[in-house]
Length: 165
Image (tube, rainbow, N blue to C red):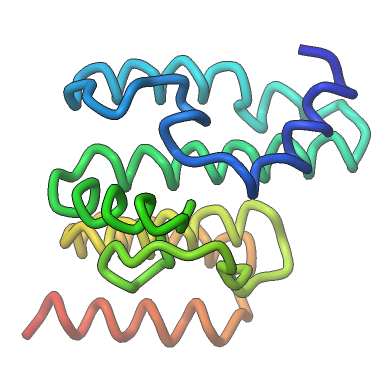
């Protein structure tokens, strides 16, 4: 895929549902969703574009985050059902932390760096899926990129206390 095509996809991504993004049908089983995710992530892995122009790296990062968001939603049966219901109402995305409620207007995750935002988004998705230890791990990774981010720190403390309790 050329740089121009990647930039165009990044601009159109807000109009794509998760199935279209992963290039799968709505009735495919979870293993096919997983295979499609891995195929897409290989194509749009941010590390493959480290030497590219900043705007192209940003476009790839945006696409990669959306691919991960799609996978984390569609792999979970409950979230997938909620997503399909929202999709029937024209809602193309799941709002982080909403338990699967779809939305077209998803607020950008807090953070100053692309990797910090990426790991924070992954943490929220894992939290939604009930995997708090994985969410904590992602938040710790986000903090390696943004050590002084108060939002990341408070979310980490919140999840760590949930794990203890």
